[in-house]
Amino acid sequence: VIIIIVTLCTYKPKIKLVKQIDWSTDLVINSVIHNDNGPLSPEVAVGCSCVDCDSDYNCGGLWTGRATALTKATTSVNIFHRQHYDSGHDNIHGKKISVVLSYCDKDLGWLSNYLEGFDVNKVTIISKCNKDPQKENLSLAPSITVNILDLPNVGRCDHSYAYYMTHLLEEEDDGYNESTHVTVFIKDSRYVHQNGEWNALDSMYNSTLQYGWGCGLKTNHEMSVYHYTPILSQLKMKKHRGFRGKTFQSKYANLEAWWDDMGMHDVTMNVPFIPVCYGGVFAIQTSLIPGKKHWLEKIEHSLERKDNIEEGHFAERTWVALFSKPLVPNQVLALMNVTNEVITKCCYDGALFRNDAIWVS
Image (cartoon, rainbow, N blue to C red; front, side, top):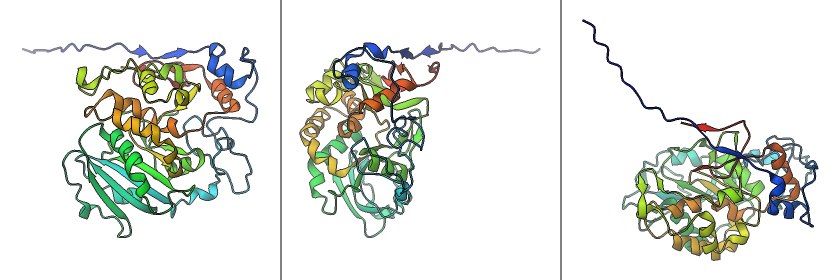
């Protein structure tokens, strides 16, 4: 006798998550490109030959937010208004960085290898879960100053970062005003639950030299680091990895309402595209931080409500936008010429997308 058992599995249909946008109807885009706010003309993005290549300094790294590799002989003008970057900086070892690490309970044995070769000014570990990060076991170079601070377990890593930028940055005593000094914000966990993989620290550093910010998570090349603000701003999350209800959800109707409460409407809503770094890991040109303190204080206070909260996901999508320069018309046109497709569903709302469709199961 042969008994065959057949198990029927339910299958969740794949859902299309992209929408085609008619750029010509966007008033903000029109105002950026045309002083008279007239209709868009079919002009080519002059001076921008690509958005994902090494040959175009001003636009070649736009799609992924990576630094473009140019030789020392290159004399392109950086229309991001940052210092000129060249691949002579590819040997980044010896460049100054400070590290802010939001700690809960993960082993930090990876940290020494991660920082190897860099001139690390200071490592600030902000502990949130009443756990000892065991400073003596970090195996960092004796020259690296390590400070450990215990804070209440609220707001997760985003609260740690806001607290540091608001309260601790001025304690940096060695070169944080230098244009090549970079602050790296990282978590204790190296687990990636988003779509992508961790960026190398040298790549983050180089991107920060060029743009003022660098992402810790590399998404696949179908999705851009730049997001279409009108769709991103409508983000509303009901839950996140098991957290839901009143504990997780905020009082805000959406991300735009949170931006308004933070006083950031002009920073975010008056530009068509803003960069977003996912994963809670990013880098900022340190000298840019003090000028944003009035916003950072509001963000810190907003993140004090609970542990895993919706406001933290709003902050995650705001950090690098807060420190980035608005795109100039040629750069806006370059992105528009690549695609008119935008992801419209949680949790990459607003991300520019270049493919026929994106599907999830």
